[in-house]
Image (tube, rainbow, N blue to C red; front, side, top):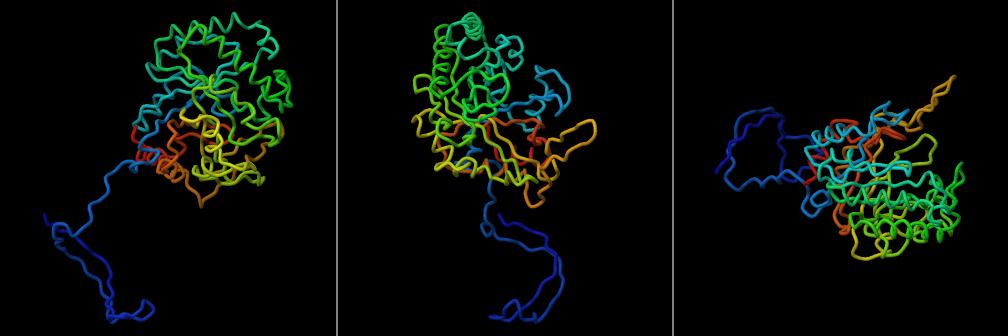
Length: 374
């Protein structure tokens, strides 16, 4: 049917063939109504994600924690309410629920029960035992107890990313680790031995676990013996491929640059010859690829982590970048097409090195909700 529309504005009349540089014949203001015949206007695009885009098919999970000392203040690490509050803000169910556990903790089934049938993504850090003790069987009792508890768990699917970011020198299970209390893994071969030992021991007591191989997006340092491919434990021991990667924004020290999600995923980073997506896809065909941690700087302000001492507060080195938009970064990410094996994105929803939170500004929440189907 015909539509009647109101109009108002300033108008210019020009002769046919006149350019915009030539003065108009007549300038005037007018307002009124105009009737548009049926079919004369294009049909507006329906709201929601772009068909075929990541936002139309991937699921979104999150690590939501408001209790990291020195960042968000103190809090209960097992409080599920921040997760549910984020779900409410986005109008989406967030699964998997991401968390971090050390080997000083048994499987916390009672705490996980609060998340119902949502899947779990557990970053499992053997931050207590030396690698040699694991391989010698001295942690078998712990592994058996842990596996038995998982087998009895009545919630969603349990995914474990064992010893993640192994190609980063900050991880104590990396051969390149130079910090205190190293795990004693001296080569990628030994890393593979520990991975296979743990997976085999747990699988002997439960089939409830899927194992996620999750390197950092870049090899740090990028040398032979620390390439992510060299840590791969083999198809028999891996169910999901994943990686961690962030847009750190433009840092004052010049060590980071604003990076679109499409570049994180699809362009070589850190001197590599191939993108992280292509590197993972080449390890094994057919299994899903996840982004197990990701986030974007809040460019509206300096959101770098401040270093506080007794005498001074050091700036965060993440100055405002008014030419960029965090909302647009997430919208563009969810509008991407291709990357067919990518099935799951897991947001690191914490104010830490940067303000990675999805609720750092209302427009970010709106952009995600508008471009995410499930």
